[in-house]
Length: 456
Image 1 (tube, rainbow, N blue to C red):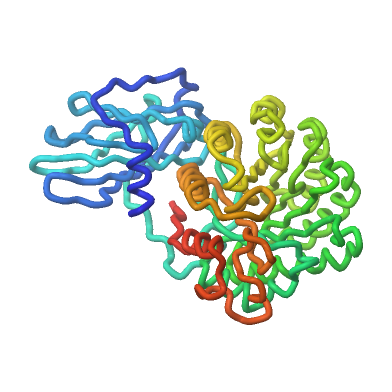
Image 2 (cartoon, rainbow, N blue to C red; image 1 turned 180 degrees about the vertical axis):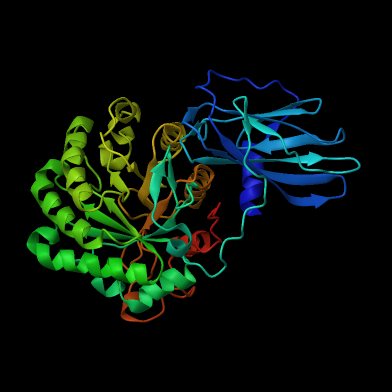
């Protein structure tokens, strides 16, 4: 209900205005609409509408249908621009969902009023083409299924991360700190707590390359990463393998190491459903073209062993889409990495990165598949006071855009970005209020709220 109210507050459009419809691609060759009355009260109701594109990809869409009873009126809608003239209703896609790949879907909805009966519409069109799919209610999500059980292997569809049902999903989870420093924080008890108490969908495994990391013991660190992948898999969480490069900022410095590492972990984990590859953590002091060149050499190494897994590429300016370097997402939009099943990393620290960064993400999310592989509730140094207001604004935006995220960090590091108080990892309690920092309490509350994983 909290998420619905936030959507209503931020996305609702007061109707009665004529929708401004921009240029559209060719009409969809097929579509399906699922119309569900989510709740109903005296004289009013709330409807959820799921539009699935069964034809060629479309950029720009308009859903049309007629209310079957003259007393049915739309009051407010979300995730589309809604209008009604007589019994005829139209919903026009907005920036973040206007592109629908084949098999992709958009979730929209509205509240309305009615007098007399409240029958469901049965005839829908998408860009003028009849949607002939059934309008049955979606099956319930298994109550006891883990994130991996429900969603299966992930892939990119349009600008979204999608599950085995070709539906957009949002993963919410935590990142380790450097496993060379905080290995005692990642054991059976801590991962049980993360999966069961925190209800995390995701464990990001931060394997530093320098700073006493991978370069000092490639075989040993590869084995430690694989072990954490297995532990996440056993608990139904996705594992994001992070090749954590920071200094030097040019990922090409570690190109040979990246090829060796990813060839090994991809071959070993190719049959798993839960693995995502992050090939460069925070490129900095380097051009986008150099990052792209690195990505286009590393990704084929992964694809040779694991052709279907999602790969995430870091972006310029410490994975800020270039904003921290005075640029923006246009350099990526105009010169994307030549690869499929690909997403782009965005990082933020809430006390340092505010409205101009959020504006960039809002704009970029309509054109690029984004994954917030790292963020903090504090300043970019990892310290200072938690900025609760900015953190909440960020998380609300990511929820609205269905952008997945991992918080820095699930550790007891002596810094305010850590979720656990110093000394926690020497014990067995990783969840109670007594061991959580202010940041940890906020994140556990957000992550443990129920997921919304669509299954049809």
